[in-house]
Every structure is written in C-alpha cells, then in structure tokens.
Length: 336
Image (tube, rainbow, N blue to C red; front, side):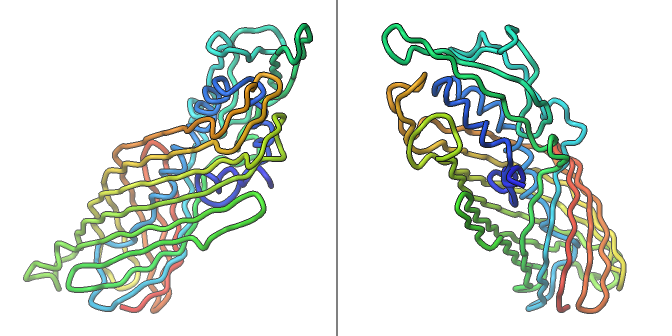
C-alpha cells in the first residue's frame, strides 16, 4: 500500500513501496541521484499531469443563470502499453559512482511506472584514509510491479451558471495530511456556449462550447527515516500546474446525451528534493536541498463520452486520447 502513495505525491491519491529504496540512490552522490531520479520520476510526472487535467466538462451546453452541478470526478491515465514510459536504459558510463553488481555496463531498469525488479547496484567509496567501503542496494521498481497500470486522480468539482451561455467551474481535493504525505489540489475553469447566442438556440440540435481550465497540485513526501544516507528533514515537494483549452460539442436530449471535444494541454511539474544529506559515504561533504527536477508536457487531446440525466442525478463517462489515454467518470448532482 505504501507504493500507492507515489501516485498521490505526483499525481493525486497514493504513494509507494519502492520509494524507500529509490532514496538509496543518494549513496552514489548527488550528481548520480539527480540523473537517476530524473529518468525514474519523469514519466510518472507526465502521466500525473494528464490525469489531473481531465474531467472539466460533461456537456457542450452551459448551465443557465444559477444552474449548478456538484460532481465527484475520478480519472485514470493509462500507461499499460507504454513500454517506453515504464523503463529506461541505465548506462553506468554516464554515472560517477554507480555500478551494476553483475559487472554489466548498461541495463534496462524500471521507471516509477515500471515493473522491473531485482536489479542490484553498488557504490564504493573511501570512508577514511586507506579504508574503502562498498554499499550495495536494489534499484526500485514502479507502479506496474504492484499491478497498477494507471495514474489516478480524484476530486470534487462544482459548476454554476453566471450569465447566459457562461459557466464557472472550480475543483478541489480536500487536504490529505499524514506523517509522511501531504497533498493539496485545486483548479478553476470557465465554459462558454457559443450556440446560446444563436437566435435559434432552442431548436438547434447540438450545443458547442469553449472550455479553459487551470489545475494546480502541490504535495510533499517525507523520507528522512527511509534511506541509507543520514540527514534531517529529507523530503520531496512536488508542484504541478496544467492548462487545457478545448472545443466541445454535445447533443441536447432530455435523458441521454453524447459529447466530445478536441483541445490542447500544457503542463509543468517541479519536484524538489529538499533537506540535509549528511557527509558519509559518497555524499561527503554535507549538502542541503540538493536538486530540482522539471518536466513539461504539451499536446493535442480528444475525447468522446456520454451522460445520463435522471432529475437531480447525473452520471457521465468519457475516454480521452492523448499522450496518456485516460478514462474519466463523474457522479453528478445538479439543478437545471
């Protein structure tokens, strides 16, 4: 269950078991830790950005003045068939201290999305004049190793009509705060229905809208007591921001409707490794707040979905095609 926290840290809901030995890489020194962490965490950051950015709409029709809807939205950004996101080639020639225990120079190793296990590495360092010590540890696996093939996110979303053809949206995840993990999540958006301006709006068979949405996630994970290298306040802090710009069209039937959209997503993730890493083994001298990792995504997205409306209760589901294909499901309660 620890492993599921990895998705909370850089995506939305849980963290993971392998993080304890992901931190062991600091035994190889800051430069090696930064290089490995960039390749290891990068694909997860990408998947998380796509996951938290979905679910902004379930119709092309904007709500009328004071019409509202409260939704519980869940997203799953799949990476099941993305082998290029689940592993990378680690070449020890690119590292200062890291070596494979079996003597090989290159091996395919797991990213935070992967499932490769049992890869043992070591570092050697002089801990005192004339005294050399070897530290051996296993590289971490990823979410696939736990049978998880998607990056999840979940949040509450509220929508309200403010004037003709325009709807404001807000989304948030109540703060999750444990001894090791803290997560905060919010977003704001706007939807404007262009067909509401037509003189034949009432008899027009479809609704066409434009949607703009901004989502922010910040999270932290404290691993002070889990790594080989001693120190204080050792933690990862993650900051994610994404924008979506989408054109939406939907039917205007009384009970079951169909909708679809095409748009563009742009997002950035920053992961800061913070705290003090005391001297000892390869990390000498002590370092503080050693490095930050940045990852950006951008690309076209397209989705298709359906919505069932039964009075105050509504249920919707849609599938998005993008760099990370995603399934989004919403349980909605609304008026008008």
